[in-house]
Image 1 (cartoon, rainbow, N blue to C red):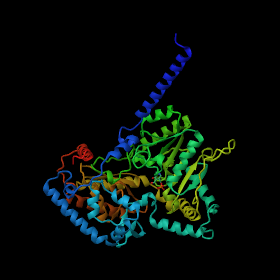
Image 2: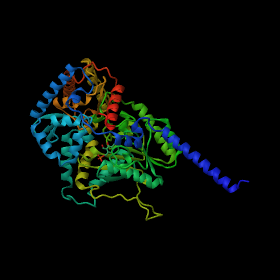
Image 3: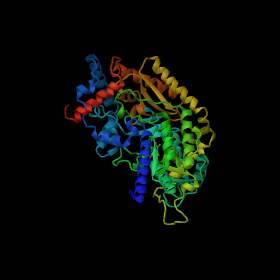
Image 4: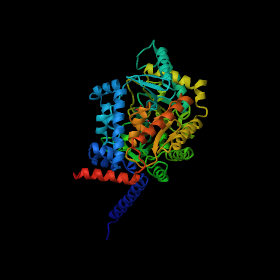
Length: 551
Ligand SMILES: Cc1ncc(COP(=O)(O)O)c(C=O)c1O
């Protein structure tokens, strides 16, 4: 006869295994089917991709274009290189000289375009990474070339560079008597805190040195207070470069306590409703522009399948669903507004999408031009110690937390944010930028150019309407026309709110001129027969052949 104790133990273990298996399945089902949704696998795949570079023939003819098209490309490229060499002489010379000792320059230089094209391109087309002045909407390089700035300084530049210069100057004057004293606060910190409480609608504030750190602290506090381990994030979302928020490629370690779940999907809600190990959900509202996809950099632009577009109502509904399930399950909802905070509305993404988070991170523009990260949150979640267990603390300090000069510049920024001239910039903001987006697209369409733009307010990305392997070349034509782009190229254009009608009109005409030059150069030649899918498949085959040593 079976021992009843053994039987009960076996039955319990069986039930446990079934429940675990079911939960695992639910988790798998809640992942986005793309590699972006499978971070572990993506990391493994990334490790398998072999390094190789195109020679001259492949550089110009990787799509097997007709010989006359390849010849046009060669001639256009030679012209472009000559033009760059003449126009960017000093900036590119200093860049070449400094490159070997600045790791970041080496990295960004290598990843401006798909890696196969990068060495040949870098050898011939010299770019400058040094600039010396800014004013209005323009930035000037060492050779005196002036660019309409579309880098937005990674999103910091919301109101125009002159605005931040004066925030820094005025802010420095406000704290001058105290100078660089740390560990105690300049009185303006108390004012900043009051303003941030009002803006965020939350109780407490902590200051950090970067957005990455603010997010890190938000996640740590969520884990501390819930006693749970896992963070839920969404595919492709950037929340800083710290390990837990960047599982997969880019991170030397495999993901440990992070679930990357499908954005805007019922199955994710189901996982949140049923698992017990989830401490927080981390949302970067910029994903509204491209849910479940990574930041669109040109280094991965091997075809024309980049997609983007905002459905504000749908994303707002999604955030409200997340809010409801987080409340129901005691999960902390963190809105990471480091990028979009103040850009969409004076009250940030909370105001824009009509959702209330438990913790909100800010950074970038809030420092008035100086580096900062800020976390605002509910009092019970912000507390770093427990009265009943005094040794159990959630430690978070930093030498440069709330330094006087940053706090001074922030003080000016926050006061101006409340002033009439700045408030008025937000009037009709969405309508104005939607209209500008439509005008840009109309201008491109009118000339039959295979390019469009999509955007979330002032954050735009360039889309390509015909399959091509050479879209990444477009960024160099845009620069030639005096449009300043960051290292991610046409993936991200960021406008500041001081772009008036005249400046914007100039951007449109330069953009169209760049697209015309790109087409004339044969990079878009209209005879390509391969679909985006076929292009991807051929690149994959090529990688496989390299991997197997058959190429
Ligand atoms: C949404 C978001 N969170 C966090 C960060 C990290 O901020 P920082 O670069 O200041 O560390 C960024 C930076 O781009 C961001 O866009």
